Amino acid sequence: MPTTIPNLLTWLRILLIPVFVTAFYLSDDTLSPHLKNLLSTGVFLLAAVTDWLDGYLARKLNQSSAFGAFLDPVADKLMVAAALIVLVKLGRADAILAFIIIGREITISALREWMAKVGESRSVAVSMLGKVKTTFQMISIILLLYHEYLLGIDCQLLGSLLLYLAALLTLWSMGYYLMLASPQLKKYQN
Image (cartoon, rainbow, N blue to C red; front, side, top):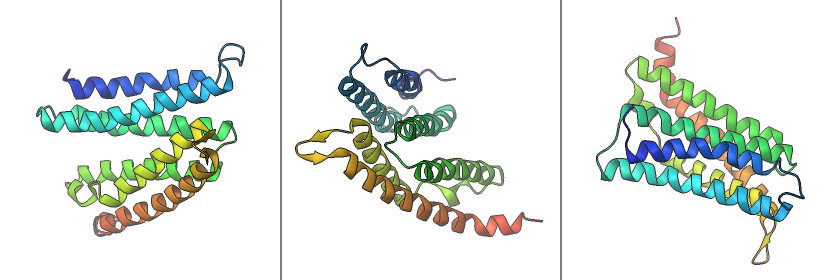
């Protein structure tokens, strides 16, 4: 495993998951609900920034590695899944939407792995649609974690609307990737 700055940032993102989850399991005497919201939002936001930063630095410093290419999406999916599960438990997100988003991530990860094994990984590379989906997903999660009013904006309401939009984009992008992979799926079906 290459020890590079991008890989260290990815490991940091994974290590932040228990910190993020633990915030909601502390008693209200230990950490007020407002501080829980602030802490979890801050940790998730830090994770989102390190996600962008590790990719940028890997390219800029020429520190891309096969291990980093494997670990980065795993870290992203773990953080998003943990956030969605916490939000469902808190009653801030719909379980069906969380299932759609997490289910898509597992499906597309498996599809990409299989396509790589048959030498067709380029046909299911990350698209702009996937990036737009991720942006809406991250913003919605941040708003739902904050859960309070911010500058007169109801973060819960806006976060919920954006999570519905993220789920729709999730289904659309999954369909798109499956369509791209369909020639290979048909070829190897037998």
